[in-house]
Length: 227
View 1 (cartoon, rainbow, N blue to C red):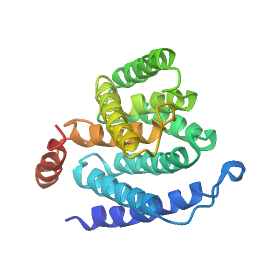
View 2: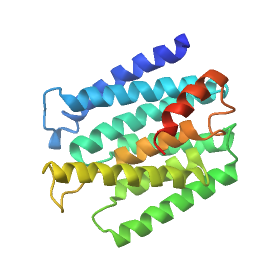
View 3: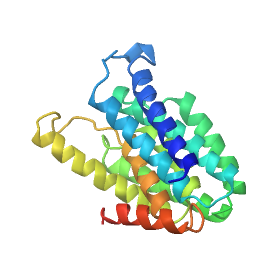
View 4: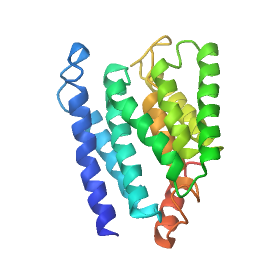
């Protein structure tokens, strides 16, 4: 196991736990100030595993992998806030959009045309879904899916949205069965978009460069069990 990948995993586990704690107190107008719990541990585990897998899987230049990790940091913070307060704040969305726009011009794994098509198609698709399912897609989700489309490009962004839809559907059924939510309860879509993006990033043979043999075998086997 790469020492750099391990360090990234440990570091992002700390970031994930910290993000969940920050979301419980900020923004202060809707802060619940909850004590640490299972959500803290789950976000720490998911964040650490994602960072470890991205670094292990990537064969891109170091600067490009670093951009992916910066994006992951913002996505972790947004996921925590959306889960806690049902919002995706612009103080996080705006830097994400800016980074993904600039990265689209220099991304060594994706052409600018594919990135732009991915962003436009993703916003269009989610916008149409928002009109059909009025309570299912929030405006913040549209702001989020645009930069994710730039990051993944066409057609990978559709895979990410499909995975996100499967995950949110399964989670909603579990929550309904356990009576933790009702039929009209809003379930935030942002964290599932983030999960779909990370899974797609790791599964695609091109987005993180040609797979390194050991990383590809392990991560491909692990993610392949989802299908």
